Structure formats: C-alpha cells, structure tokens
Amino acid sequence: MPDRPASHRDFPVTKDLPMAGAGSRWLAGERWEPATPRQASTVMLVRDGPVGTEVFMLRRVSGMAFAPNMLVFPGGGCDVRDTDPDLPWAGPLPDDWAALLGCRADEAQMYVAAAVREVFEETGVLLAGPAAAGPLADVSGPRWRQVRDGLVRRELSLTGVLTEAGLRLRSDLLAVKAHWLTPEFEPRRFDTWFFAALMPEHQLADGETSEADRSGWARPARTLAAFGRGEAVMLPPTLVCLEEVRDTASARDFVRHAEQLPLIMPTIVSTTGGPAMRIPVP
Image 1: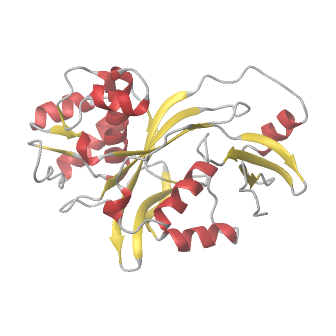
Image 2: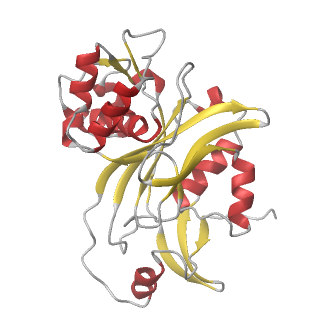
C-alpha cells in the first residue's frame, strides 16, 4: 500500500524567533483576545537569472516591530486611500479581482493598489504606464525619489501620484499567488495577499528603504540552503513562496494566477522536535 501524502507541514519555532515567547504561552494553554489583522499586500518581483528565476528580497532591520531580521518580499499594509474610486487604472477591473480574491470590489482594488504602491516605495519599481499597454513609466531621477518618500510618509496618495504624472496602474502586470493570515497568538497580525510581477524593462529595483538593511536579487535555491544552515531567517509564508519560485520554469511562467487560493493560517503545535508552526498541505 503506498504511503499516504502528508496532510500538514511543520516549521520549527526556535527560541531566537520573535514569535517564540507568545507561541509557547499559547501552546501552554494561555489565551488572550487575538489582535485584529491588518490588511496587507506583498509582491514577488521576479526575473530570469543565469541559473533560473530570481526574486527580489529585503532583510528587515532589527528594530522592526514585526519580523525583525527576516528575509521578506517587498510589501506592507494597505492604506484606505488605496480604495479611491478615482485611482487611474488599466487592466482587469476591481470587479474581476474581487472574483479572484473572493472579496468586495473596493477591497480587491485596495489589495492590488497596495501591492503596486508598496513595491514602488520599497524598490523604486512602478507598475504603471501612460497607456493600457506598452512601456511603463520612467521613474529615474531625483523627483521620483521624492515621490517615493512622500508615499512612505503618507503625505501623498497613489491616486494623486499617478494622476499628476498622467499614468495608470497596470493591474494586468500582477498575478495573485497566495493568501496568508498571521497566527492568532501573534501581537501583530496581517491578512496578506501575495502577488507576483515580472521585473519591468528599463526600471531598476534598488531596495532603498529604511525598513531594510540588505536587499537584492535572490537565487531561491541558494537562499533556501542558507535558511537550512541557519544563516537566513524567514517566516513560513516567505519560505513556501520562495520554494514555488525555485520550482518554476521561468519568471514569466511564475506570473500566473494560482489555481487555488485557500486562506492559510498557521497554528502552533507541539512536536517531538519542539514547538512548530503547522500549515495544511492539500
């Protein structure tokens, strides 16, 4: 009789991980009111490298309240202004995205807009152009650096930035890949959609953000090997998504909507090897 496939996957929770203390208390039976998750988007910006698909990653600075020292993809929390009905838009409409994400159209627009805004804030890559097809915006030069800073400080909105520059958000350049929810015991929780996008030609990903002390193009197999040796730290969503990038045939093949988009919320369990975060495996 063949072995039955595993129904779950465990990720060890070591003492040096930020969630270790709260996770251990939760595992011991202590309970508190779970924090309300903040809606967020993150983007796997990919390109074809010399030995396979590469993805842009950042290492969060040690002083961050959430996921310090972790390798992550560009991303962050949604802004209520991301729902602005006047946001210049090209590509699949919010109603189309709502059908994919299983939410209201204004929420779908918010997640897509947050993905575009956050990847611009953290990498300088802007998925917007003057038309519904063709070349994207040229965002080189000091003026665009000031625009990024204004968005980070919330002095500017994505709607205002695109409208002033005569640009439209290109939702056709994004693909949705996964949906993760931070565990209940975490003091800071995020309801996050993971997207993928091809690195645009004639733009540069620079990773110049105060939230990261290191950034660059990562080779998934090499980064996963570093994780296995304890030389890199990643949360389960990042690890699982990075494995998917590693296994893709090309960057373009990766930027396709996932066939299934279940909401994944890890739970903490006790195993023979110690506490672990467990996720279901289809």
